[in-house]
Image 1 (cartoon, rainbow, N blue to C red):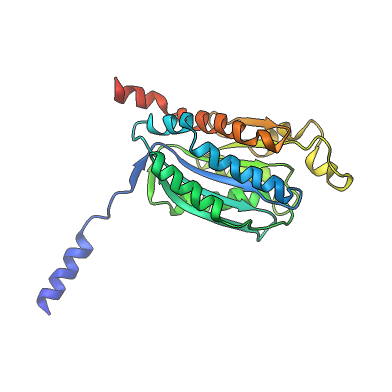
Image 2 (image 1 turned 90 degrees about the vertical axis):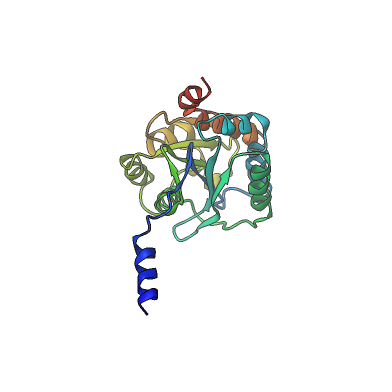
Length: 241
């Protein structure tokens, strides 16, 4: 019994293992609401897969101080329709990037409901609280084709995230020929890109990428990921001399 007690004391006294350091913790938050049809959803998902296996993106990932990032992927529609499709995953080379994209492509579509960007952002913040990685930069990457029309205001979720030191960037897909019942949702006054800037994005170096066709989603995401990841490159230059 004394040996067991001593063993338990040693276990309790042992320091907790340090979280694995990465250059950035990135949550991809993807709109899968009903304004996105199945063919557009497939283009969107293929865009994510192509981006993470793109040589330019991999160069940005491996060029950081630690040469790796942590990524999670979330799909959202309305309130109560938010799903963490892929939990925190380390990506630091072509093999880990391929593993991430294989899992992404194999996953079925999660929802077809309304659009609660705020619920997607709130889930991302929950994931940051649960991550086993340590990152000096935390970024939420929101992609979507419409405004927030369910749940609390997107701006409120954005403000809470920014107050916690998180940056939110956006990638908007503007439908130039929407059906009548979706017009106000996908074509807000001033344009969807500006609506995202006013209500969704915020934090250090935040920005919005805009496309007008789901076929352009992948290339825009490549540009976006390179910018998001490379914002930590001054530290990498210090490492590499």
